[in-house]
Amino acid sequence: MTSLTAFERQHIDNRCAAANSKIWVTFRKEGIHCYPAAATDPALATGDEYDVSFLGTPHRHIFHFKVGIQVFHDDRDIEFIQFKRWLENLYSGKESVLQLNYKSCEMISDDLFIQIASRYPGREIFIEVSEDGENGSIKHYPAN
Image 1 (cartoon, helix red, strand yellow):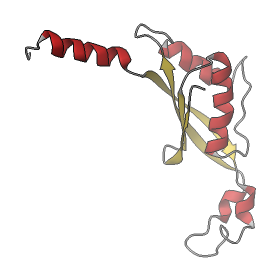
Image 2 (image 1 turned 45 degrees about the vertical axis):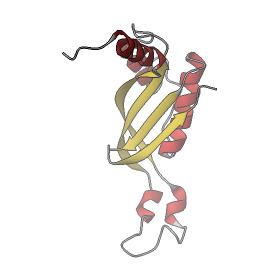
Image 3 (image 1 turned 90 degrees about the horizontal axis):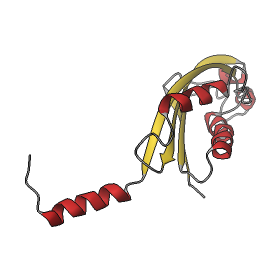
Image 4 (image 1 turned 180 degrees about the vertical axis):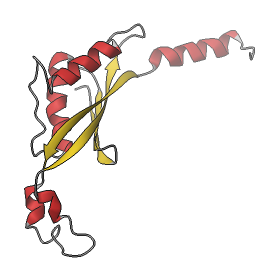
């Protein structure tokens, strides 16, 4: 281990104390969605190798979520497993309030953010949502 001077150690300790800490959890949810405009919009229904008109009909995905939230101290300010279970229950079970429906990944993030910010106000949050872990979105929501 490298020997530090008292000044160097204090500098490192100050940086640790000033760190913006977040925890994150992941979960998956099966869903059916579609992008109705894809069937008729000429920019999407191109008829060539870039054609995505098939997105206009309902299709299945496994939506992958990664949710991070700011914590204010290092000793389980928000407990990972409890946070993950609560998020999963927002889409199923007794607490189900969110639906995937025909929403984009960005819309799904916003709906989820509203629920998280209502329960945990004043915290920075990031949400990643992807279709099958392949393509998706990332949204960062400031604390205020």
